[in-house]
Length: 128
Length: 128
Image 1: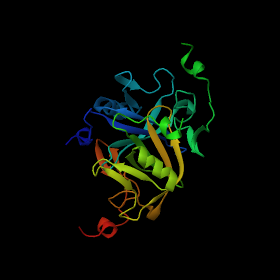
Image 2: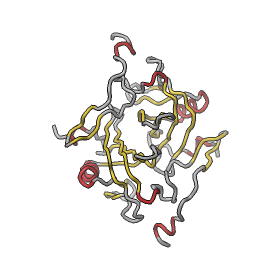
Image 3: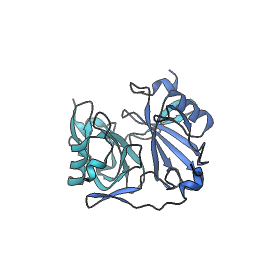
Image 4: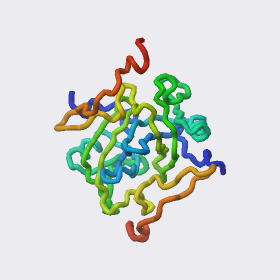
């Protein structure tokens, strides 16, 4: 069986994909992949996700330049997730200009933004 | 607004939850939480998930003893995921007896199990 057929795609043909910074171990983001996205990710060695909001393939960094070079692809036992070890261009994965999308931490019953904005999103994406 | 109401629950009332080993940085597993699971996780400081297969709350380690002490709870910007920093009891998160559920790595077009089984599942769960 082809490796891609062994992936337990959900009923919408998707799987959760997690990007982890290979150097720092930080979890950068969580997104979705369909079959085509995973195939392109493996072939290009750069992360390609499926954007559910835009309903199309999304080559991470296509607008921002913050591409993710993929060093390793892993699959879990049954919880239906892909784990990428990546080198994050620019050191910024989040559209808010932060290193990681997980910048809110639960502290005393509220979500507190603990991580700094490294670059103004307007400078990343241009004024819109 | 209550912190738990700020979580973008999906249409099934769930959110993806990732457990990361706080010491090693290794991603241990991915599971699901509903509102009650997240509330219990925050209150007990131990990971409680929602088991979709068993359709009930699942206090991780209830059978295996491999509980996850929760040191930190984070929420991402919009991709709808929770990230837990945990101390993994027994150093084993996976039901296969491995440290992590992500023990299969894509190598030359096939999934290769790269991580050792640390403890026979029969010894963890008993003969069934």
